[in-house]
Every structure is written in structure tokens, then in C-alpha cells.
Amino acid sequence: MSASAPGDVPPTSIGVDLREEGVVIEYLDGRTTLYRGIPEAAEGTVTAGPGKETHVLVTDPTETEGVMTYVNDYNTGEDILRDSGVGRVVVESGETDEVFPGVIVGRDGQRNRVIADPEVAGGRVFVFVEDGWTEESYEIVSGPEEGLDAHR
Image (cartoon, rainbow, N blue to C red):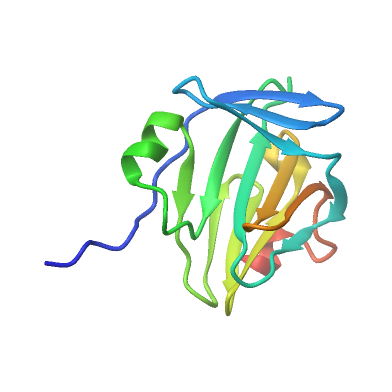
């Protein structure tokens, strides 16, 4: 008997605290995590390197709440995601999925790609890229030049 492949899980609103030292997330189960550092500004798109975990956070206009989605996370159990409020989306190479209005995720080979327009999203859009050795933080500050429809 084999385990089923991970599927999509919708996110729930979670707490967000933007600080000088980074972005703090408060999950529904009471745990917190800090994505360290001031996010690097990115225009339109962030593409993660192969094998990197990709987490997308969209804040509400108050910047105190938001929704977080893991892109192509094959390790976190569905129960853990639901208890924490984090969503998951799985996309195959060459596919895209609009995970939130104004935020599209896709996959190019082994690389996750996040395309966003913060004006359409109605809040700030952060992308956290990490593996066992490195953490990178980005904020998508403007939509792609060619518009979101070019990526749907």
C-alpha cells in the first residue's frame, strides 16, 4: 500500500508581525516563526532555485494578518498544515495556479516561480525561499511588466 501524493490545502488567515529583524508568523496552533532579514524588493516575479522550499505570504491591508501557502511542499503533513493555517499548492512543471487574487505560482522544471501584483492582491506579497543552509526573503513590490494575464 503506497501513500497518496500530497494535495492542495487551502490557507486560513494567520497572524503577521512585520519587524526590523524580519517577518514573524503566528500560526493557528500558537507556534511562531521568524523569517529573518529585510526582504529584498523584487518586481513582478521571484524564481526559487532547484530544491528550495518556497513559501508565499500575502498580508491584508493592515499588515497584521495574512495567508501563507507552501508551493510544492511534499514533506509537511496535511493535518499539520490545517492545524497551523498554512495552505499548500502542488503544481507540475509548465503549470500555473492562482493561489490568491493577484498571486500566481508556477513551476519551471525544478524551480518554483511566484508572479504577483500587490495592487491586485490588496496587500503585501512576500516570498520566502529556503533550504537546510540558506534563507532568502523577497517582497514583490510591483506587478510584472507584461501583466498577470501573460502568466495565467
